[in-house]
Amino acid sequence: MTGLNCLRLICRVAMLWVLVVCSASAARAEAVPAQAVEDAFPLRAADTSSPRDTLSTFLREFRDSAEAWRSGKSRDVIDRALARARDTIDFSDVPALGYGAATLIDMALLSEVLDRVQLPPLADIPGDADLSSDRDDELTRWVIPNTRLEIVKITEGPRAGEYLFSKETVEDLHAYYDLVKDVPYQPGALAGIYEDVLSSPGDWVPERFRDTLPVWATSVAAGHAIWQWIALVVLIAVCLPLVAVILRAGIRWDARRRSNSPWLRFGTPAALILVVAMAELFENLAENVIGLLELPMEITGFFVLAIQAAGLAWLVFVLSNRLADAIGGLRYGSDGRSHLDAAMTRMLFRLISLCFMILLVAFAASRIGIPIAPLVAGLGAGGLAIALAVRHTLENIIGGLTLFADRPVRVGDFCRYGENVGTVEEIGLRSTRIRTLEQSLVTVPNSEFSQMHLDNFTARRLRLLKTLLHIRHDTTIEQMRRLLAELRALLAADPLVVPESCHVRFVGYGAFSKDIEVFAYLRCEDEKSFLAAREELLFRIEEIVQHVDAGFAVGASP
Image 1 (cartoon, rainbow, N blue to C red):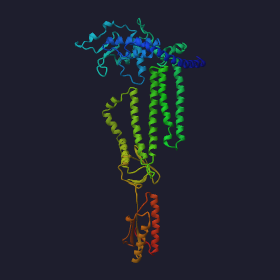
Image 2 (cartoon, one colour; image 1 turned 45 degrees about the vertical axis):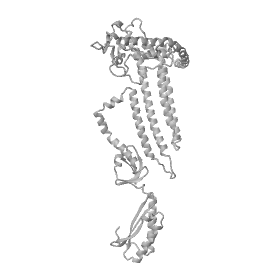
Image 3 (cartoon, helix red, strand yellow; image 1 turned 90 degrees about the horizontal axis):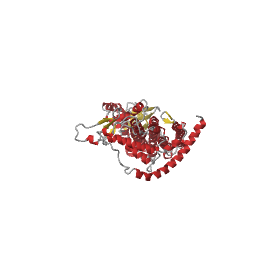
Image 4 (cartoon, one colour; image 1 turned 45 degrees about the horizontal axis):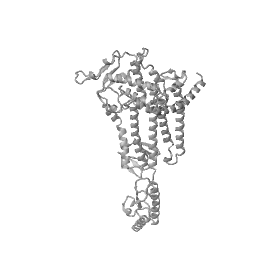
């Protein structure tokens, strides 16, 4: 097959697909009135009251569905009969991911097997009369003679009391088909249905579409027709580059608006939403247009689920950070300060995103057939071991919440923690990061940091100025009185000094000096302004000491 022939096939597939979809819509509209005559009871359920009824119902309904599909009848006609045939089989262990395709294949395989074995006469199969309640030996299992196909009575759940083909039979259908596929069909069999299902397009394309393709294109290779493999390659070749372009465009949009409001940086979230939607569209096209089944559809569904789960997790993470930044940046009040702690907001959004991701993982696991509830319930002693393993992590998270609840320090505060000092740079889920005076970054677990003695220097509304002046012993009493009076006047005149908090007193005699204590609170909210104000006051104190012709003692103890 040359490249030109492949290109012609691809173009022909695309053109014919559009035409057949349009014609299918018209045919569906015309077929609806006729169906009202063909099926007077469209809502009737499958009869599974006995093994005889279950077997006969499956054979009849699946044949009706297959013949309606082969003759191009309405999808409603096909689906109603197919649903009744599906209800005769216990598909409770089939995962939700690819449920429709998997059950269709299983029904086709069961039909192939039943059409190749010799079934007993209908009268010899246990019926309602054989299941009378006055019998001592209740029939709970019936096996088709000379086969391993069994019909069992369901004892639990919403379908209790019904007779269905067992889950074990469903699991082994491929093996049974391999054993009988070379056996001739019984008279009146539904021949070739399994291969027809494998090589046919999906539900969105009429069955006669396959008849318009070349013979080589409809040949089955590795479980599907060649045209299906070509269509899958084309679909992948179109979608993968498109996903990369969408993600790159979204990230670039946000990068160009990094300095703008977080509300304007919606490129990445929008791109992720489009990628998740494209993954869903890809799966639908693969199943309902190309008609992928069995392992290829399972692999496709798994990768689509993985892309959607990763995309949604990324989306939640990005949105939580953007919302935290946007809400934390809101300003209220005349003071221009935010009433919302940005770090606390970010941490809360991260906790919410973590919970959402856990739910997302649980949902994805249930889609691929991993039941979460029995898994969690069966942890037992393992759950205790896991709880002990994550104890420190939980302690750190609780410690972080305690820091945000009590708010002893906030991001940007200069504080003393234990024996060290530094500026708080980040309070995260697990740890707090502090920039020390040496400009190194210290990471302290929240469980330890919340237990420390914390002295928040930034939260001080007033700063203490306290110093002891050592005046020479030869200073006269008159000079001492003048010195005290001028020092008191200095503090009283300074606007940064709190008047009711300050005092200047002659407090005693040292070995080499007369000691004067200067005590005052300064209205300084940060350390830099306090250091500057204290420096200025000390200079002026020294000027006053010199002005009264006094002096500082030499050799006085500090």
